[in-house]
Length: 194
Ligand SMILES: Cc1cc2nc3c(=O)[nH]c(=O)nc-3n(C[C@H](O)[C@H](O)[C@H](O)COP(=O)(O)O)c2cc1C
Image 1 (tube, rainbow, N blue to C red):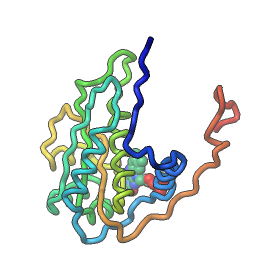
Image 2 (tube, protein in one colour; image 1 turned 90 degrees about the vertical axis):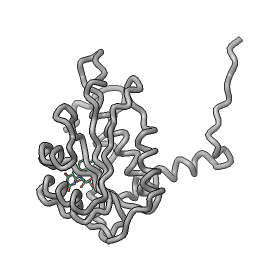
Image 3 (cartoon, protein in one colour; image 1 turned 90 degrees about the horizontal axis):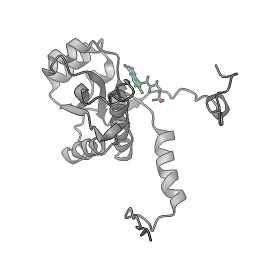
């Protein structure tokens, strides 16, 4: 007979609905940072963020992420320039640059999985930051070659995203979300969907 393992997460005393709603609350309340306060991110918080990122899941357990954590003002400034002088980056005390090892592509379908894997890891950091009272702004609008030059990233390593992190001074307005019926179809594609 197959044995059934009891899987524990260490927080069973909590009611599962409140556990779920805590994540939901973070996901719903999160807003991107418009500008960061002049206050460093504590080292243990940086470590926690990076741990959240590396514990993300990835297709075939490829773990293709490679992160460059940047705190030096001069380098942050170069990253901001690479992102067309993005004001959020300019004021960020910490930028985590998410890069990928492309030789760890999942090749079965021919579709590379690293962009999705890196997105999963980055989103884990976004929510973890939020829970620790930090704010983030996810940036993909940059000249990749300039980011590469600033950080000495090799040519065959894509720079997938940058995440500016810190204590928020100002938050951006949150855009309205599409109602659920506009974005969810059940069982098959909704032909009315735009
Ligand atoms: C993958 C991704 C890339 C983004 N890139 C940029 C960017 O290059 N510049 C920027 O100002 N905001 C960027 N953002 C922030 C979005 O513009 C922001 O999340 C959007 O306005 C929705 O607001 P919300 O985060 O409150 O949902 C990015 C967000 C995501 C998820």
